[in-house]
Length: 169
Image (cartoon, rainbow, N blue to C red):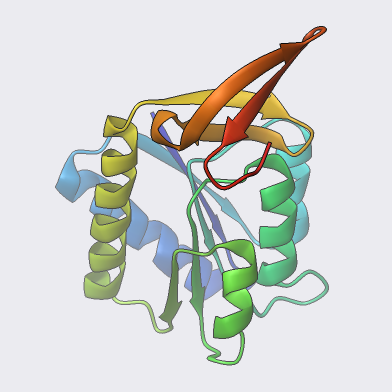
């Protein structure tokens, strides 16, 4: 089951996003659940308690803990989950690349914008699923390693080192 997190400090925007995600779920007959968070602290707290999501929809401008800060925390738990920014400000678009966000959508978020963005993202996720991969636990958290990126694996003691095409181990 697909798990989606939606985080926005503006209650009206959060409600709108939740309604749009629910409409998308129903229209596409997706087996998914979504959770809403009125601030980044609550989302990060859920992650610290072990909750994981397949998709993160974040506002950027939030008091105390910005969406970029939240995305950096997400990346400590999950290096690969798609992060989508839905925000009213253009100024953080370049910074969103630092957390490997897959899209940056300006508010107001319409049904068309959300559906188009989700369609693209789910198509990309399906393509990645079709490619053979393994999930490995590392010092950086759980990571998906595509078999096509693996050069060789080496066992040293009780550790397995995966050597990737990029040179990363």
